[in-house]
Image (cartoon, rainbow, N blue to C red; front, side, top):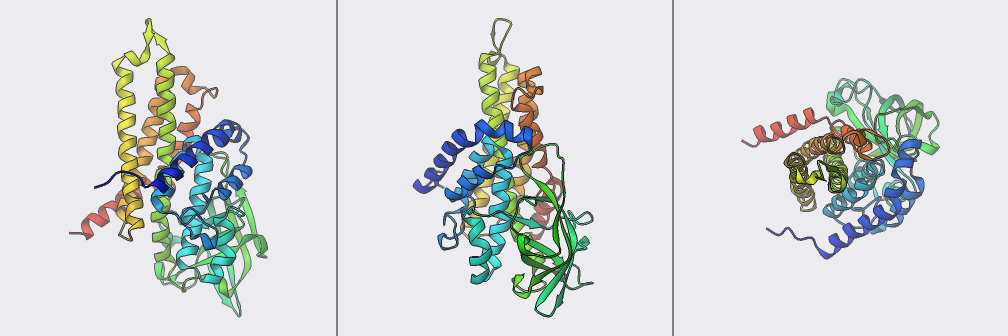
Length: 382
């Protein structure tokens, strides 16, 4: 068993860390305060091939592996969780399904711009009545000659307000349940009948837009079909597995930022004539954070390694997402406790980390759903 990174993986990690420290971290608080999409940062991430890390170079990506993706995303999220989730969704939820299920023509048209960071993609799945249960989906797509007519509303779509392209899940065969779901790749900028609806006012990840996608007799060409009709649910499951690795990486990044800031503060904060790092109560909090975050990173790297080696990784991805997001939430709560009153104030980034950490327990499948996925795999495997 070899835990050493390859030369390329180490290079990607260091490049991401250097860029995040110099270009993202100094702007993170302002982006959060202004709810501002980091357009210039995203453009630079595209130039560094981080918006499509595992996409082949011929389609605008970096041509690297998923271990590299995890390592890079941790570093970006450590500087700014909002930027991290923008990068994660573009890589995992948009580029992956277009790469995996698209035709060469679709890849040239829809994948290349997003993998290269010239455009941004999103994934339209969740609806008001279809979150954890995709079978409750109400968005429909009906064939009309050489076009599909889409009607429905997608909710809580990360990147939805800034995306040029989206993979959209819709019902094409009513009464067929999961087997009636089909995926489409949609040019949002050039689709009559499409509009961006409400942009949510959220607790955290405030520099990342979360929007409704509204389709009212929206017409897309027949070749917008991604894969085959009725295969959308299977595509969705595989796509979400990769997305969960992305959210696990985001959570680890948040947790790493919390730990570093807690350690630095504790070294300088004095009580009873000594730095608070001298007190066992503080030492134990830091030790627990460090241990859980290392465990979370190992789980996530295992899932990435399995995907790179074409092995089943559904259970591993669910474990990584569940554990990493819980670890980040615990770390952020304890981080605020270490800083005391200062941790509760916006003068320090700790309160932002706690607001950002919470969503990691919810999106890409709630942690309750992750436990069901893990249990299903355990039971099925016996």
